[in-house]
Image 1 (cartoon, helix red, strand yellow):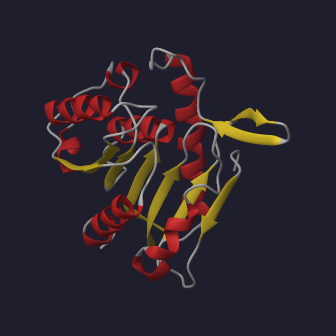
Image 2 (cartoon, helix red, strand yellow):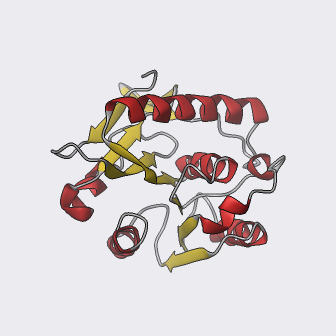
Length: 216
């Protein structure tokens, strides 16, 4: 597997429902792994790949990203295609070595990871049971060139965002919700008094939504 990753793999042969969790800009493969034991009593596969771009966050501090940040919020097509290919290859390899149920895969991303979650799920809605975007945005680059696909209407989708997010304004998530609905997707929505984060209330709702639906 070409991407470094952390994982929660339960005991037993499976197959198990699976979450592909994608960190945000400057974070790492460890960022979202703590959610795993809180879902289904840990009886699921939880995969956290690490972005291929290395960042210097400070002296001796490294972070990682999926693509370079553009001040406009847009993503270049070549950067998106490269990150998509890395993640698609990662998932294909993971399905060969981990007890993943191919019918119950959720792709979830925070911030920049949410962009990748949008890209993967909208491009291949037949592959994923659900899509979750946390504190994220939906660039035009992801939407351009999408072919009509009836499978999108069956894609369970949750968007969560903070009303006080100083990095990605909540209007970006509202715009994403409208765009998804225009594609025929029913969107569950969570709006919280928080910044660019997953606070305890939003975490409880996220975990409840996953456990009660896509991972049930």
